[in-house]
Length: 418
Image (cartoon, rainbow, N blue to C red; front, side):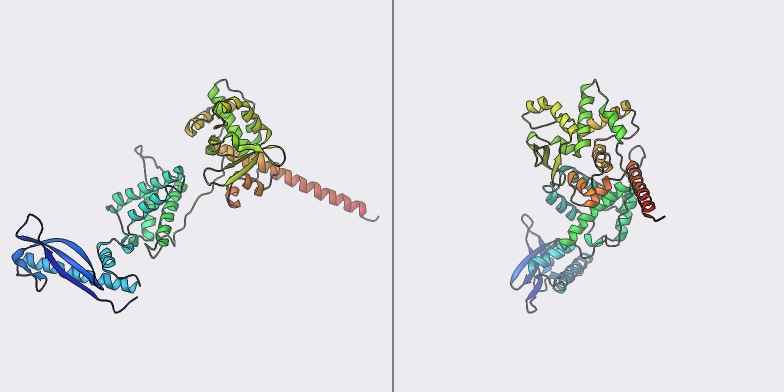
């Protein structure tokens, strides 16, 4: 950085249009001959301004306050120059003006990073994910308004306490019926999204210290709902006279035997179904959520469902393979299906994906790595959240182990000399 650059600050006035007896006061910053002007939003009578001293003349209380303000502005502009120089940043008339007005990176606010993140991510993240970020944004603004009584806050003011207070605010948030709106994991998801926005601010160098550095997100682990083999058979063997219920049942079962999520079943087209290397039908598609390529061999029961709706697929030129309703409508129908089948579980469409991973795959000896590929996960740890080894599989494996022990003992007795 240059140390021999020229730098000056002067105050001057201009006559605004329509007013003959008043002057508007400006500050002019000059660095290496380049100027930048700042309107100070102050005015003075023509006879009260001294051009030689660049100050107001007189000794009234109003004049003294105005000159004190000009001295304060002068001091702040000097500080801005000093700060930029100390930070090894470009020192120019415009950069000093931006720092003074709070428009440079050092004065970026929470709203600035939220708006920057959401406007840049809208074409990167899926609609559902962006919807969650907008909800987090809503809670942050509500926290600023209700708890801090401000509309915004500088990023450099964010600290560990701010995050802790925001967490408490989320945990205590209630709806119109005085019910808590968020679970522990719901609170953690909002904090996780907030953390990602602050991490972005750090990468942009809008903030020097990450307030999340000492904060730990604490998610509670839950066993995710899935259907046992008996419950899966109950649904398979139940025929519904109501067409809507029968269609929902088939779409749900299709997901149970393919592992496809709701949106992936919805987006499935005829050209996604093709002959694989084993001369059997496979699904070749991309996960809507992660854009990961998935290749899934079609199990006989999934193929039966596709064949059942061939006429439907042909009618819409293969743009849809299955007649799937909205996710909300499907989940309402699934509750009726569970009740009719005597299944006492909270049945949602996503339960089918867990059922595929656990009951259809892992329980039948399919390795976790293979299940991970079929589910379209990028990390094995993600699959471990979905899939668990059920008790029947544990029992089967232990019985096999005991059989091996028994066979070894018998072999040892045969070989043992009399």
